Image (cartoon, rainbow over all chains, first blue to last red; front, side, top):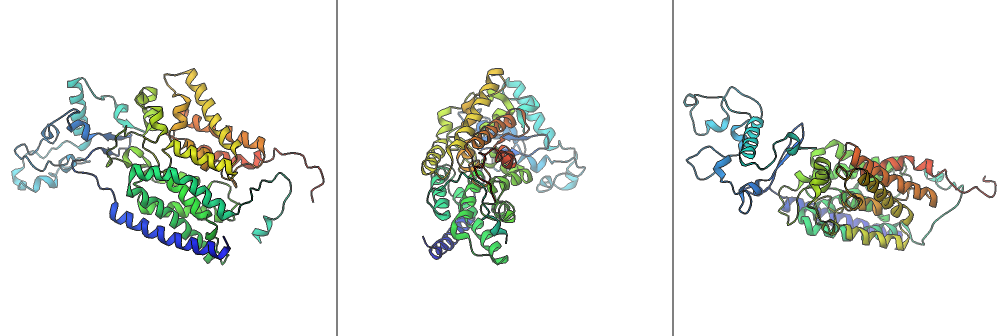
Length: 143
Length: 319
């Protein structure tokens, strides 16, 4: 190829690829499915990959949604995300999610487990009860 | 003025396969295409977006630099496009667009142009850029986290991550043939061993890369991993697992073979490759990083000038 021909080819290639790339990003960005398949919790001591599908699906562990998403018990729809109520840091105020349905004076007990405490309690106790699944730190928190 | 220095020649040997820079660049891209297509099939349109944006942005940065510095346009030689493609091969398919933009800037401007452009870079530009990106935005390069929205029909955990965290018992369920055929998570173009090997063989046969570097690199990985595995099989994985996972095969044919940052004589090539292979396994087995390939390549790039001093004695006096 001659120099000018090479340049023209390169300009064309760059423009076409940029358009295709921008279109792919705009139209095909991968959103997490609902319910999620897997979830990655980013933690300073090591990230935790939680396999939601394996815990909920049959074949798999086949847990009911309410086994983990334990509030509100009476509703069949719209399971809340854990982090809606179990905040990352301790707070004296009720989480905003509580106030979606309750008046502030209705809420007597404002002590809510942090997300970390809630996960540790839920995961480890269930794994111990059933004698399956990780219970040691490094079995979940990976580098 | 800088370019004039490139014309000072001191000693043989020289290797010329008769092709120009553009032909060479597009041939390397063609050889990589099979591995990239395997990535497209695995990860779909998000992977297409990353690859297309990476190649086009690499060309854009090249054009912007040459225009700003009033140098002749060099994007026609396809070299920037090639580095854009190689960079994209190392990225997860879910890489945000702004990381691709920054990564291509790092590769083309920081890794290549400020060293003097084509043929003057001390480090492989795409490897340098990826290493900086990984250190800067570690969580975006966590392949377990990157593909949480994908439902694969194979083990969805990153093999080297499993090895790092759980040792050989963590990788017991991986089948070596599956890994070779690309049934593993990883970079867009680094997962399919078969495609990378075919691309590599093509490049070696055409003389675009030197087989001495590729083969000695793989031998280095194999021997080191074998020794570790023989000493303590409970703790260290076997050699084939190391070869078929992470960036190993990509590095063997597309990274460590980069001409500007690798030696020119046969013996240094062999030492360079063996050293790279040794470092890959050392970093993986007793180092802090999950995949040491990029750091191994950069370290060998660093010692390349020293290895280049191993050369035949000149017969005549060099002016």
